[in-house]
Length: 325
Image (cartoon, rainbow, N blue to C red; front, side, top):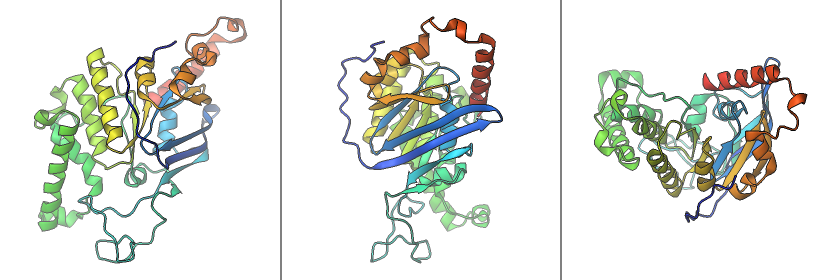
């Protein structure tokens, strides 16, 4: 199962933890989809999440990003100073962040890990963004408009200001449009800004989703099967883009079934099997572990000890829940 190539992509030194998931467990009635999974992601790190179909990978992502409230366990994320809509950091003379009115806003020290509420909006505002297995673009909007939608979580104009198109709204709208164009350039879609999303090639739609996620100004981005359905050239482009994201200072967690892609991309890999962590380590350690090979292709030794119907029902149920998430 050795798939690592000789390409030298030296990673920057990893820093402090930005995400820490401890004992995350998710039950759906009697079905245990994720069981006591731990994961720590550090600054400047690319972490891969692998496992057979139905292993609970997307369910785990949903727990991290607030779509599901875990049955038990905790997700903590690095806090940050207050960020104004134009992306600048404001501080008082003593270094404390301020609100728009100038009042001091008391927060935990930047970089400390704080519990994340299981609410998608709160997770995004904290600095975590994601993409999904299935493309979720606004098909009848342009590429630029799709990215602008992602940016609106960092604006502060109220409903009345927006309706009246006051000065603050116009300033924020111009800044949002400019930032969206920058991100399209970043992912290689600068010339496609006015194209409708539905008319774009599949690989470009995937990159557009990443641009929209980046528009939220995340510190950590989670990518759920970003190369699914791609040809080799598109897969190489996706790999280069993820390295580019990492080199810009973000951390990345990737779910993927393409083992060559994962082992050539990631600094660490976590393998889930039936909702539990099987092994976590370097790509070399994971791909050489016989348990990983067994999880993917089986050994044939225990076939008569497993009820195929029961296994099929369990895997299908988890897969359906993940796919519909």
